[in-house]
Length: 245
Image 1 (cartoon, rainbow, N blue to C red):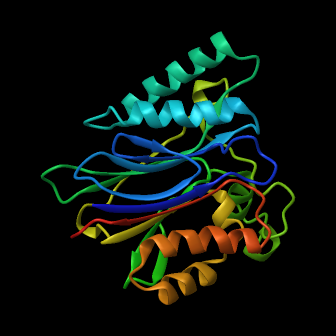
Image 2 (tube, rainbow, N blue to C red):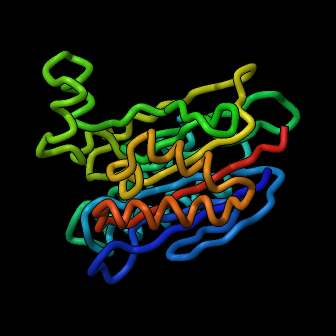
């Protein structure tokens, strides 16, 4: 699969807390591309606004890079180790989101593993987006229970407050989704951190997909740049994946 990504740190941050995982490579604060034949492609967004968030995102990505047959059980073990690391080395609870795809070797099955509010979209007809993951956030819970409309949610004061993650001092906070796409494997995907999708509407992202054409590095850079133009001060990460199928 071919992978293209752009990831930058937010305004006034000493270091980005977003991490990109491509196979065994962990990336931050760079724009690049790679071709891999197996392993994860993922985005993790460290929680907390300090070094612990960046370290948590790196830890989970590094651990995921060593997995040959991913499962919820293996991620639960990683989560346990993260909490142990946090309690031993920090005065605060390290935490991170994680949204990743894993192509099962020899099988027509793409597996999505997700927790938090980073996102994975399927790209249809090279220009339309369908969100595969569901945000683990307070605002999403309020929408699902009918306490907020989609329009009301746009201005909700705690839009980014998450309800599930790796770490956070409690093992029960890891409520990971495992989604097998099997016969519905998309040819192309887009992964984003909330610094992107909180500031770009679906229409804006689809417009970028339509206008940029075959230059996928330009595509991911444009998404980051437009999010900043729209007011994003958060870390911004956009990853485009072509599965080559």
